[in-house]
Length: 166
Length: 292
Image (spheres, rainbow over the protein chains, first blue to last red):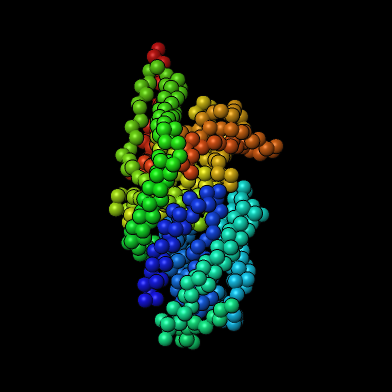
């Protein structure tokens, strides 16, 4: 069942990210739903699933972007793994902790991307932070917090997942 | 507050760490080979993902059409679309006519100008945008199974859109001409000065490496030079809006307003065969000696 949920999640991510979000947020920077999902999976399910889902999400999303496949896989896989490790240190996951954590992870991932990309003379690091990294981190934190609130508070998914584990 | 308690066993953690290390080392030691493998494996996966992608895109298009046709100003919208299509067609025709006229002026009356036939093209529909924030790309609903491959040029009747950088079985990713990572050989139509067109961070384009002695000015049109980049000569890229001359620089550059608004483009044409300029096109017309 978990595999089915992950498959649906993976198949749904690309259409939502590349078709729906550009219509909803037409002015450029959009939240990275892949990063948010990988963080949530890592936090809730641990570093193993975080890594696997991160690799799969990074690979799939890079197939539909000009981004390098290896970079997408390593970044998202690393984020899932790191989120799993961080989740082990957190006993109670509150929305505030999640929002701050997502913001920090998104900033770090964005800075890593900016350093790795060969930015040309028009796109220095300051431009990258101002135009992409910071706005995306804000979006990621807000959207991630909203998703957490909807899923955990409204749908009570934790009880369902506990039932799967039983 | 919710307690996080779903944890993987110790062996799984070790396996995850080992997998991460193997992949990391693999990508560092064999980057292109491993990337090629994942790209190959990704082709059929891309075909699978293309189905929900197309479904969502068609629903999105349907909603957009519904809004445009029934909620927004119906008659004006339709008329606007028609005029835009007409304008794009006329822009393309105008560009080709200007190019033909400039070439005819340049050649002597003894030389016969051969109108250049465009290579075969495939029509495709735009179904999505880049999944990240770092690149300006569009996703097309045609891929390897339709004969598309990386580095093929993508155009509309109005001008150049970009070039394909990635393909799966059923989709292609097109890097737009406004992306700073793109580079297309360009030519100022009036002065015949050549340069390289790159995108800018403001979603415009810039023609670089224009000779200092060039008298290019705002309003000049820039077209593809046909030398490299998979495009035939004479396709419109943009119009010069500003010339930048820096003191002590070896070249000047020009800011371009692209002919094609990538945010509005819905259908494109992909140049199917890689365009290779003929020997005559590369060398130019032979000089003729006057008869004694």
